[in-house]
Picture: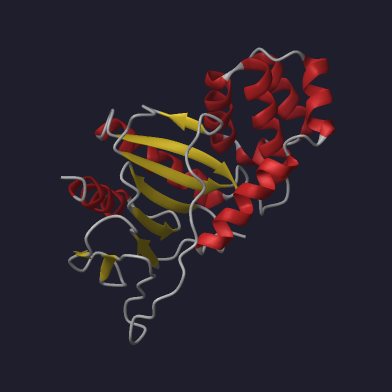
Length: 231
């Protein structure tokens, strides 16, 4: 299950409402910051609904970049999702362009066959070999999606510094099942119907949601708008 649509949706419970016009870039035509509601463009009158809350970014999250960043790009992702592999390069470009101002938060939504196994493997690698090993695994997994299987996960874990027996115990323990389910549920509550599903979360609580492997030009425009909202 994956999505690569042009649908966008925003919410900002803390900032003054402001229209974000994509100047013809997005099919939807505009993105709105709203207070306490959901804006739907091109679907008739805007209806006010109780907006689901994103899980806060905590020390338990996997964050690449500064934890004091102005904007977190929270990606609900699946290591076996082809669109996630494509979007990975876009995220890296954003991090390079906005070094120190934008950080990447990786969360699990394993819909594809083998995705759950990969998500568990990544968490076990983080536990046994550290955060750098988690991000190295993420890089390798998204670049070698067709190779992912039980043997690949274990070999990669050992190569990245995890003890093989401890890794075997970890992946069969089930101790990360609840975390992964929590990530998946939160993505769905926010409106995600596939992967990647993305949220730009500002340090003041502003939130812009967008679905799919959007191209770099569109993501850049959204990041610029998120940063500008902080001025």
